[in-house]
Length: 215
Image (tube, rainbow, N blue to C red):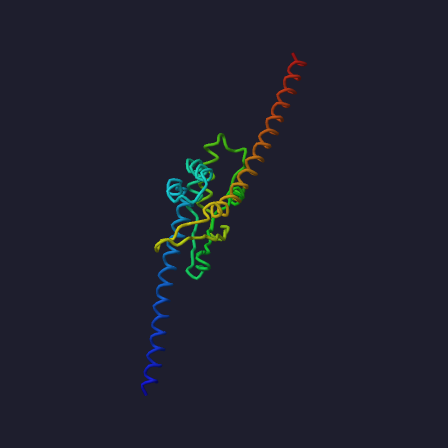
């Protein structure tokens, strides 16, 4: 009888330990999720000062965010980002904790597509007018047209705190594709402006020749 009691006590103790361990794991997961959300909110709000304090990013990336944060349209574009971090995506292996997240964003290509549906690029008198139209378009874009970016964040645990380890990778995953789209669009815009300039100069030249013949 005593042996049975001891056995039951041992089993119950084991269950209690497992239960407590599960609670601790759940608590840790919440900490990781909270920290992952803080990292992504920092990036999408273009908070370069917060990035600097975190000490997880290369200086060049902090400077990039500092530059783009000066543009009102960039702030508006990234303020529309939707961050999703699931505690089920938190895993710990060999002392490293990873967390899976998704950020839904409005791609620059989507803005241009919406813009060209409603406007002709040559209808704007200046850059300010074009920017105002783009801001208006951004407000009309529906979530179904957002693009999902999957991101893996890596953390080191230090005395109960979780410290981001792969800041540069997170930055690249989140921003690089958007930057490439902007570069491509800018290049096309410059090519278009160059052709328009050549066309205008050609017309001016022909007009001058006609005026010369008629005078």
